[in-house]
Image 1: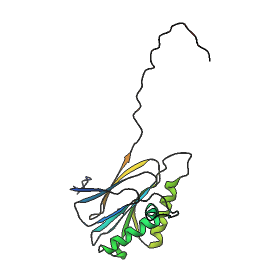
Image 2 (image 1 turned 60 degrees about the vertical axis):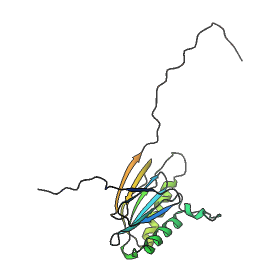
Image 3 (image 1 turned 90 degrees about the vertical axis):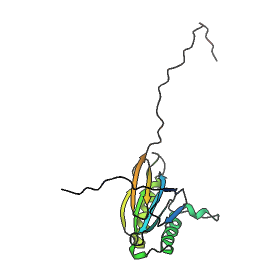
Length: 182
């Protein structure tokens, strides 16, 4: 008889949302981190031995940082702060592993920010020597990501933001026989 893994999400008594420009770190096995991505990218990072990890969510690969919190939206800041946070919480650099999500093309005809974000994240991790053990980057549309840092489990679901089209019959207009010209 063959053993089969049941592909269900582990229970999470605490769900924490990671918004744009944010990051969260935990080792609590009851915590699931979640985010919704379009052209943005999220890195899920963990130390599998220490069972500590976290998630970030960045909007752009790089840019000017005029204000105190402006850097939070850029990839370099988001990646550094998450890596340093996991290390401070007890992780070891030589054991870190990453999963990358997002970088979707949201609108045809506009600059493809998603590809720039995805390329940045892959290059950043290669330069830092942190292996990418799984990724779902680029493509079209948005996705919801769920990550359990203590176990490393990650789930992704496609998000459809297209409104349901409803056919509405045209209004009935009474014909009075008059004609108005402008």
